[in-house]
Picture 1 (tube, helix red, strand yellow):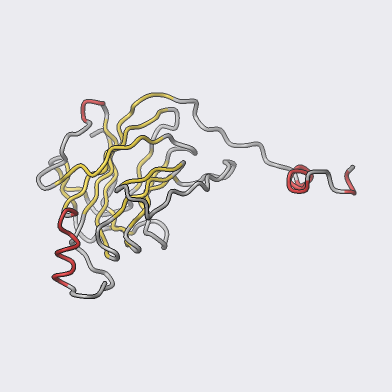
Picture 2 (spheres, helix red, strand yellow; picture 1 turned 90 degrees about the vertical axis):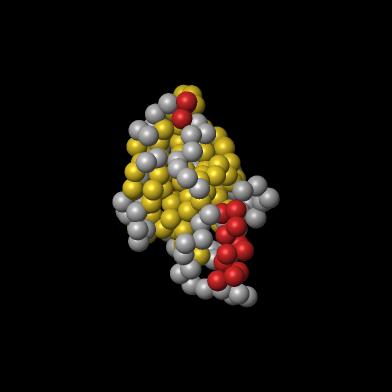
Length: 207
């Protein structure tokens, strides 16, 4: 792997969590959020990848990685890891990706290292810098997901407990697939232009 993030821990609520691109000042915000309740295990919209868990509420380790060649696609990161989905992603800002809690902002550091690609990834912030002039194939890997709901129900019958851990782990691998024109910041909009756009005509005091 060309680059591997630190191992974070996402607080998964409502059965899903996002891996998203951090917005930068000057760029137009992308608000076309995907439906987190879609049937697909992984859903993509501009600036965000939604990963669906089989457990409604728990904390899961997550690692982001950047592959350095397309031949690494499909390369299992280790024993027990299963390929959940392959999707395409195009950077929309400057390419800085991060894993997020479902509702509470960026993921915290994991409590323990996570083993991927023959190495132990130390706990820390799960962030990764993509090149915004490239497009990416993304492989979402999971460990423990296939029977996580059953193990969760057996351990905590009839209830979702706060801070439940150890049921699933995730690895998100980005591999360059092509090139694109890198996104550019938009020109700062003046107050007059903003009012004109909102109301269809310039304000009275500036006509």
